Image (cartoon, rainbow, N blue to C red):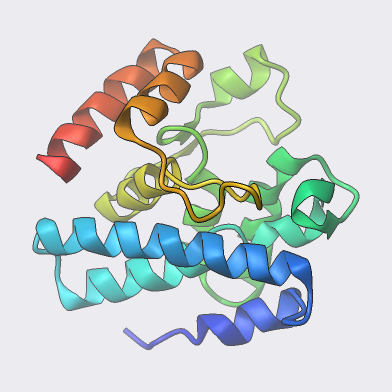
Length: 185
């Protein structure tokens, strides 16, 4: 497995001299640290840990195409679309496995086609679900960190994350409970 120069990719899409870059790098670095801690706890292989590091650092690259003034992103698309745009960017970079994580990291384990249709989420009508252990670890770790500049360095407590997950629904609560037992137990 070849090593991905994720900073080269990040710098290609987000100007290193921008406020968005500062927010992006802090957020993905914190998610990466948490995910790697879990990977070590689970005794994953060196290749798995390297992949987690790379995919974590790139999971939100699609923010470059969304409109989110609070994180200095001036694109045209709604924020939720960062997952689809991230997938497109990483596929174009020749990273299909990393691209999957960009698309399925949101919520708790991603979104089902049924959820997207029922909730009228402006996304393609297809399942965008975590399947591998690496995908699950990254999705889980991302729940603990915000890109909000006022809270960017603060890891959410388990109580705060559980409260947020509860708003998503019973399926997500069940998945989060299973992940918590596996990753933190």
